[in-house]
Length: 293
Length: 199
Image 1 (cartoon, one colour):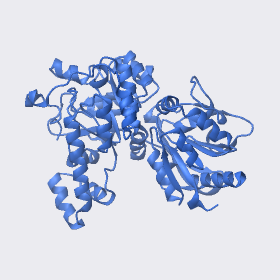
Image 2: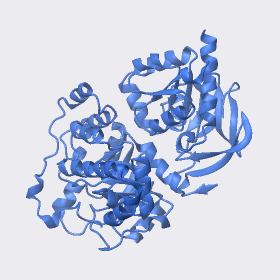
Image 3: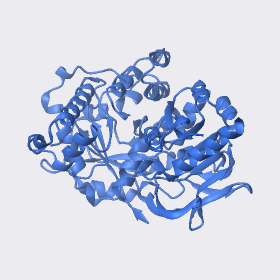
Image 4: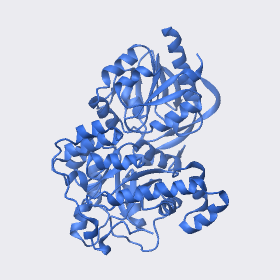
């Protein structure tokens, strides 16, 4: 019997496809998310919009909060560690968390290196803004990728940019002659074997979800139509006027993303979505998506 | 019946439906995504894939699948549930009101523990003893009890992992996550027989 294999790590991500992973900070929110049909919850001390507002150093969530949320729901529970903070990751693994998100939403702990995720039995998801970054994280052992978007803004524009970038880069690699792949690997700073995989298969070797700024059923549909395997919704649910209804509507929109009639129906009378932020109004040093290397 | 004429539906509300579609196509049959109940009329057999059973269960209710699925089951057409799909077709699920009641088993969700307890194991298939089959268990359920007319097709120690009652097949693991298609071939044979009976 084998445990902690890559197949088991990527396999759980396969099971989450077509679903919505929701940020929650309390047992009550976790239960609302499960009731709405979330495939998983991300246990956080603060949702990204509040992390952004609070400033200062954002760290791993208090294990007590994480354990309470793990007890409250039957769906898988994820939690975030800081980029490069392998001690936080070790603690999360010891709690029995189902997935670790090495996340740019928290303040990075290492300005040069990410966690060596091969050292862990628990699977990792990592953020990425382009193909090279995705493949570097997979090379380090990530079993799932999420495009970063710009968390806590309620603005989907960065998520769209990152999805389109990855999609276009995959298309480009797929048609390159084989002799150009090594140079491309060098340019992108990505492992050669993974570039060859993308060339041969026309897709990433792991599941790719999308995150950062998704706030309405229409946003969910847009991102799914751009090729995401599923969604992370953070502030978009619990910063909206009616979280349960918004959560249910986004779940349905993710399943029926190609069906405008259903999208219109679930979008009706949802109340106010979260208040969004125009990206150009955010000072450069406060952008989260540029964290990670 | 020729395999290439068989059309298998895979419930595509959430989860690993694309992988099942690939496995069925690798066997040489046709497969389509089922997103609405009336599409069930177009297919000869149905796979309910792995995913989150709470999510899939809620969407089944929301889109009123139940009467159509009941009809599909009662007409003798073959149904295969993997992992979350097993939970959804079970007669009874411990502590939860979620099973559709198509196979006489009692099941428990996430019965081996959390993700770190997920495992791979080589197992013997009851209908094909030749080569071991690589079974992938991800936050897998357990079959706690079975009724007298349920056939056990594979076990690990005392745990039943593959079982069948008439037109319903269930596995607690994920054959769609690898290349060995013997279980999908077996399911296609079940569909073939159900079509013959109908004619």
